[in-house]
Image (cartoon, rainbow, N blue to C red):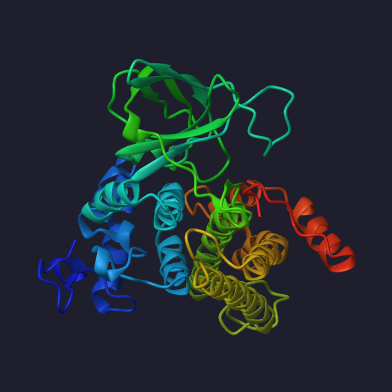
Length: 421
């Protein structure tokens, strides 16, 4: 990584280094991450080295305010960078999804000691993964009725359970584990991945996003210290009593879901680049084609124009949804945001997903129409785009999103408050 990828923060006494949005240095950093990930792929190893670049550059702290040692980026700037990163290598931003989710929650924390503890680690470059999802059981997805248990053990706790789809944790320094207490309440813990009893398996067998470390996490009598159990961000009612924060599920969900959609946009950019390269290098065409060369063929030009237009529109709606998140977060006071603006941001994130999940697979398929039979060679690896898009869009099925949007528009019913919106 180029040392120029970071710059001094003006006016700060400790001269912390930050990444400036839109800088040539940031572009070089993204290029370095892309080259590192590509080298790992050629060697047949996971992209740990690329994530080390993220650590050293402190790219994971771009949303932390300048006065706290971060880069102070807006949500729109963050998503713009995220699309660039996904174009370079879609596995890397997917690995970091849980990390940025963790960052946003800590930024809204109303517990000063807890906030300072974890923001400090984020600023130092630590990476955070997740272990939330479980398989089996009769409870509906989103109900968060968990088998993983957190039990008291003297002044500490003991964690036991098995998690699945622990995306990014294989590359992380810490893993955030969601568990149930004996009283049936949810508890969120953060523990180092090298602690005794923690086992992260690289057994993800999805058709796409294959290097994200989205495997199984096993927690066997893991000791959890008291300061590793997070405090929920609550609201207060008219009597001053702490109650559930109605905006927190939306604030969690809208960034987590839009991240997946933004990665798809980055993949679409790669589809455009590969389509152009494929047509330019085709040495011959059919006798019944509209031109003597593929590059001059108006039919192939039209297909590429369609793919490029889909990609432009997809990026525009993601950034529009990001703008809505910026507006919602600007209203946060004591961890609670304006409900109307927060709900609007979640609706826009859902709309972006519904639209992009529809057009992106078609764009990835159109790529094969410009390449002919040579495009299906395994050595070209062009099917990775469709597989990655399909994997990303399958995280939260689109029909449920579209129905919730329609119910809101027709009947005024807010979309669900469960972290999936």
